Image (cartoon, rainbow, N blue to C red; front, side, top):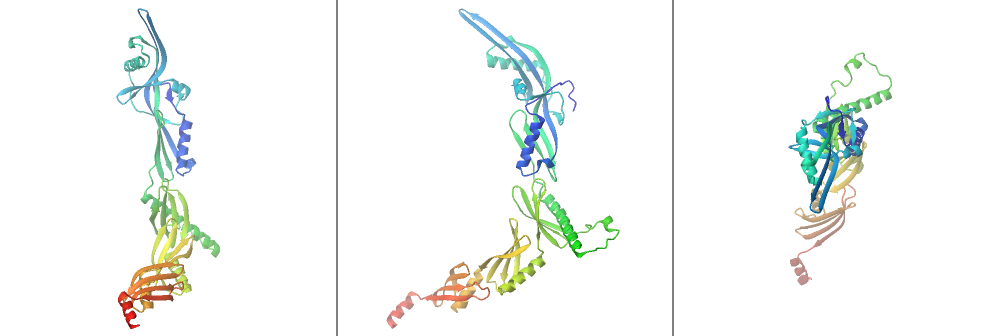
Length: 403
């Protein structure tokens, strides 16, 4: 905008200081400030700089009262009043500019009249020095623009926001909303297509010579690629998504503020997982059926069970490698083993404990109370190590009388 008759702009901060504060805030959010595209606006208001002096002398009997004061102050409108600041703040700590290089100006309010400014300043001098308003004289006035707030509008990849710095105080506000789930899913799909295409090129290089059709480069190999993506998890700064492109799956981590790709990891397909876990089951001597996939943090977890439902198995996929992480005996398995080894089809479990391949069971049934120790380290082949039956009180009495 044009400043018309205003020769000077008064601010407490330089443009370099404002940009440095902005860079620090962006960096503090974990983003590269050098990648941000920013435009700067200084919101300013018309103001008046007044130079004044005051002299008050009074003799009352033997008392001789003399008060003298002078100063330079900046007067500017704020809401329904006129605010007053020492001009020395701008001389000593601030900046007095004659051009707006590197930023735009935006005027917030209209001019204040010299009459209203003079009235407000005389009241201010009276309250601060005790000099009557009638003794305040003005030596000069200057119209200026006074900086009120710096506003930086910026974008960084898919994100955007505003950074606001008050020029009248130390207040700073960063308004940088997350890109949102929908945008994150779009980015994850694009990234999955690029990753799938990259691995395809590597495979072709390994296979050797490939025939290139003339229309490939025109239509592009990505045309018609089916993609899917879903949000798995998020925290204050990151989205974690599972994305598919062609026959490949990827875990993709994105910045919540900018949509920047922070990392990715190839995930085996369902068919590959089933094959790996089937082979793992053969090594364990049982058949395994996959129940569901879970995502905890940045790892894929596959929950599975054996064919009898006695064991619950957890597999963890990390960097394309799937390994068995945990084996637990299910409540169904505990009950079945109790009935199997006690030979009591109506036995019920009271409590059980499992640790390092050993299962302890406390139960009760038609024979009394049962205590079992079972080796379950070899899946599908539990081995009874100890079995005890504790009779009830009536049985004990019978044994006493019958020897």
